[in-house]
Image: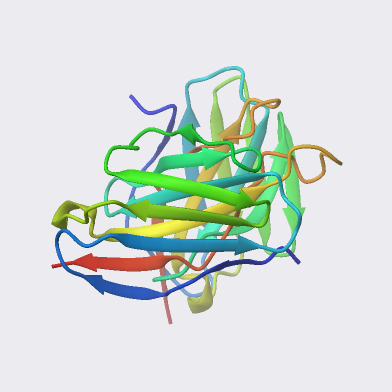
Amino acid sequence: QKEVEQDPGPLSVPEGAIVSLNCTYSNSAFQYFMWYRQYSRKGPELLMYTYSSGNKEDGRFTAQVDKSSKYISLFIRDSQPSDSATYLCAASRGGSYIPTFGRGTSLIVHP
Amino acid sequence: DVKVTQSSRYLVKRTGEKVFLECVQDMDHENMFWYRQDPGLGLRLIYFSYDVKMKEKGDIPEGYSVSREKKERFSLILESASTNQTSMYLCASSQRGGTSDPPRETQYFGPGTRLLVL
């Protein structure tokens, strides 16, 4: 079992929908959580990061961590076709310089 | 902005050839990484380096070697390319010291090299 699990999708939604992307993790020592966005045939780019539990908002994006249930979420409001990409979550123990990545969820936002 | 560049976007090589993939970062990061990414398998760590001339094996080092002669440059070498090494190769870098916002573990990726071995 991987330490960070993601449903690969694809998740297909209409433009304007609220999207919820989720990961679960098994290592309770994880302290930092990151979301990357990867467009087709490109490298992943950092989208958001958050520490421990709680929410973090950046424009249309909200990252949420629930350490009690070991659940990581990324919400996208007013989704756009340009949001179509693969989203990777990642977690890190802190003090270790190698994060653990999920396999990614493919999101398709259709007009 | 952190910039990580990779020497080629697309490469086609023959089985048995020696292949060099180069990565350069301009943010003075100590740590550099090579991953391969395959459909359904996600990112798999091949090798990483936390300092010049230092290297550590990742999860799938077999068939690969690396070189880090300068802080900003990290090379991946396929000693004798095989068809099962056809993949997307991604280089990343991260800082070791300094501030922790964003977390030091945050990796910054290059655009990737799509390698096809025939």
